[in-house]
Length: 296
Ligand SMILES: [Zn+2]
Image (cartoon, rainbow, N blue to C red; front, side, top):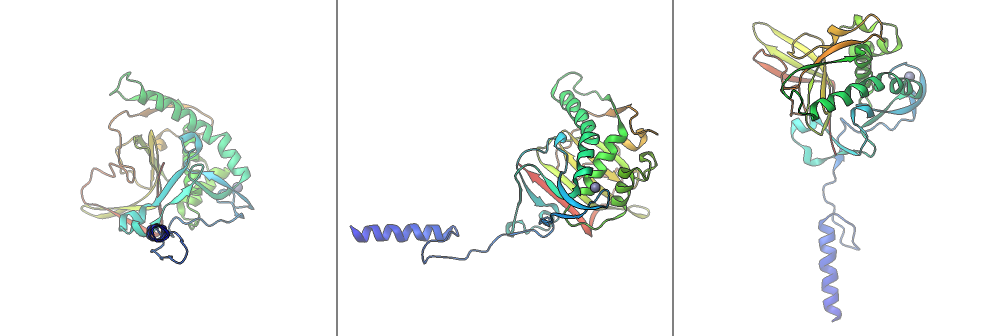
């Protein structure tokens, strides 16, 4: 009887050891999963705010904002690692209350929440309602919004994304526009938007698309996808989607009607479905490129 108990215990310990758990003397080191360095958090409590540049206590910015649906626990994987294919050795980054980056100060965070995020939230609730109802299922429609606030908000959150990116042209322009040094309507960036239907959130900075046609050209892309819309900043006019840049107003609080498409809805979380109608498209990254795909 005693030896039966002993063999059961040994069997159980072996099973636990195979799962990589500590069990008495049966400790087996399985290859440990490490958090992908492309998305590993920095865990800094204070530093330079990405938006105003002041040295301050840093707060967690939701990217995308909570008003775009980023409220629940998420598990994120680096897009770059997913592409290179060694995902089995990297652990996902867990975000208990939605995808956040501790990169901006409390003052900037509250200002974003009160103005830009509120406007984005109003757009999102109306687009969700239009997508859920069967009224005019195939027709495009327009909505009255403050386009500058949406533009500034999406730009500021993308600037705040990634714990350790180096400030590039896009981030600098986001800072200048957010701080009021530069008028939103004078931007160099196109902001395309289109319907997106996948529960995963995608955040990308400094991705590049190269076109090999009669001449080789390169475009920079900054992408934020959160159901029911996808947004892509691009430094060249290459996409066949509505461009928010064309609706920007001389005053940030002015409203105008912007067009929205109901179809075709994008079901691919990681890249614009339609980078260009030109052939010979290739995707590239730089040392500062960042991409994160977050699931529930
Ligand atoms: Zn700040």
